[in-house]
Length: 322
Length: 168
Image (cartoon, rainbow over all chains, first blue to last red; front, side):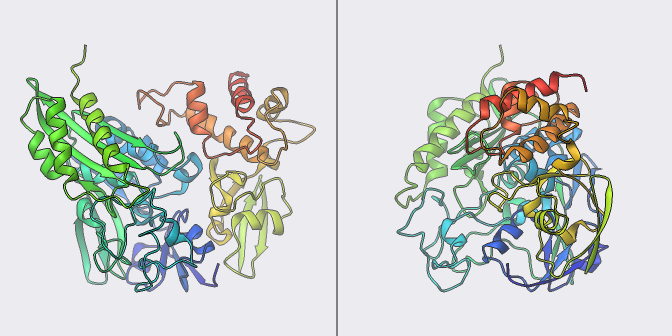
């Protein structure tokens, strides 16, 4: 690790507007600092600022930025009314990591692109303008949607995929005040500025994540990966489907580890809503999701994998119960 | 800088010359508690598992300075050679190790994991998120943050099941 100075904030106000890098659980940031991928001069520890409660917010829920992943997944209201969120969190990391990782920190985790982690390799995300070693390199974990000729990294998290499907918002505060960012718009596609993962501005801090009223219906988070547990997704699917009279009434669909952000499939949702489920319809909806999909060699398999996983999840979500 | 750390019930004052010292290095190098092991040092293997206020965590992925005022439990606080904890006795009974390097982390992790299960925390193996069952699949899933390079996993699962069923 490179040297840094450390301060502990007692209130959010002490962290907001600071030029110091915010550290919460530290499970990703410290790992990156050990690899010298991240080299902050100053760390501001926000573990003691509060913001650690899950509270009712009208029909919805307000989740403090410092709520640990374990606590959020085990929260009674989340388990009962937003099970997709519990499922997504529990699909990620290990028990030890979930006990430390926070809601805000989970959103801020960085890509696991091998070349981003290798400080001897060119990487436009780590060092803008240096090039991209992933393009033409090993790409098993990489994007098939929304990539650019500057960067093909994926956002690796699970929780944010569920938050996108659930239409959550991220409440942030900076020197210029508070604002809310839709979870679907919080992470960015790389374009020509892959060094910016999110819409968070310098000096801003995440205060909370807000969930709107429960969706009901059947909620499924399916994560396909190289190991059954404690591995990042190759493709994940978050789905919430409410049925009425044999037709899909509400449909929410988001995909993980296929782009630099959770990939919400609004067009496919609109195509499915109001229709009776069928394999043919699911296939045509997958065509819509995959329009413009591009493989980079090793990850070509993700295109059929996304299609098949989406079909399987929709079939399960729309199955009549016996 | 100086921090206060309660480890296994004993309070310590530690002088750190650099905030880069991890909790793991503070335990091993500053306090001489070498039961907690350094495996990968990147939060992947679980050899450094300790408890913070009874909850398991990777000591390698946290800075000591972030734990000023905290209470930590290490393997030395779980049991001793003279007075083994039920989980330690179960690992011996079931031969839940070969080289033994990952064992302290396995035992601390398993001890805290059983507590999580008793509190009803779900896992991705729980068919019903509100009522997790105690099964071997649940044990395996919940222990996925602890690797055993000797691959003693079947015996580790047996040991944990046995310790869970033993009277506390």
